[in-house]
Length: 212
Image 1 (cartoon, rainbow, N blue to C red):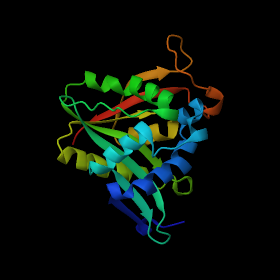
Image 2 (image 1 turned 180 degrees about the vertical axis):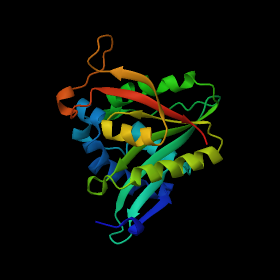
Image 3 (image 1 turned 30 degrees about the vertical axis):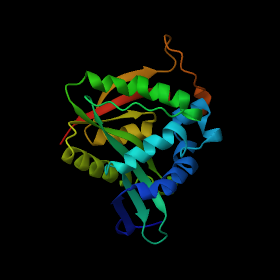
């Protein structure tokens, strides 16, 4: 395993698309609770449809960060982010494919960020660190880099949807505050998730932080 000084942090570009979606398919979506709970991981092709479009837009934004092991040249982490403008909302025409229910749940949670008084938001779309490189501060460093770049582009609030306990702790340490919370076991919603596959994660919630 690499030492801290053997890890390279860099801003991802559109040319990294294939490497990024491969990492997401093989690592992130095989461990992310909502994806597991909806079964989207079983036929996972994040390079296609709406997911592929969103990832590509994030890479084009200059706000997405990667972490690479200098020795192996392996991509070991990523923070895929984008800038949202309240006045210029983006409307996708691409099919959501296997991620339909994932999008429904995530959007139900994060759309509450627009209750905040801000015009531009840093949407922290996907965060993943390879399982062999956990507890090293890699996620926190990528988040900070993305927030600094987002602030430079005019973002006033950074936000994301938390679907697992470990990610929640990372954002808590960085000073993010908790917003809307979806409790899967609570009556009143129609989201289709199998909690037995979600490793004890029974809620999804919004976290946000004012920038800088």
